[in-house]
Length: 236
Image (tube, rainbow, N blue to C red; front, top):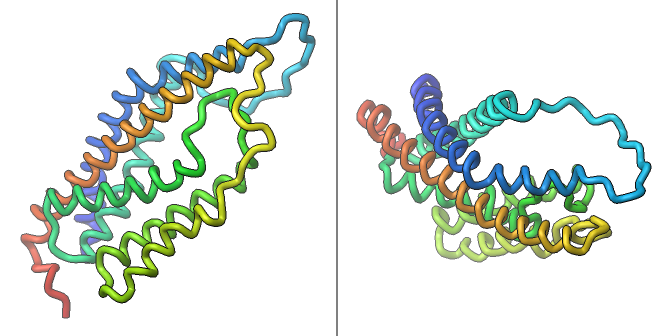
């Protein structure tokens, strides 16, 4: 019934969020990635290793920026659709309620998975991609469900919410056989480690900004364009 409104609200929210996120990324996150890539691409002295063929990737400069902006918009649109749909399903909305939804989503999609799988920079030794994806999906799902139980369920179900929050971390995230960086130069490893710590901080702020904008904007727009049409808080 509300698909058109939900989609338009999500598009507007995604435009604002992806623009701000990409701007922050461009100035404070990308330089850390580019610096790490210099170490990743460096060849040790006397090495004759032949690099395997690499899959296609956008070229540096404008092309890379355009693809990054497009990817950020599509990601923001998907997040906005999920958040808007959830708010419409629950009922009345507002900017403040949207902020609460956004922060819950930030915890579910970034903070909780990041406790086991911190953001990674180029040059890091990491576990198998499929294993990391599966654990990330499990963590996001269980954390979201746990927070929903804590927020909306009767008191005697709250314990189940805490169990769901802890469960993925009790299972444990997949880990690489070699932790950290395998670069042959100790000074390079020290610099990469410093870049990694800065990268974790900046990506945490960037994602908080993303969800802050998505949450507030979707809450405000839902209140303006959906709540005023039908009292969604009253369900038959």
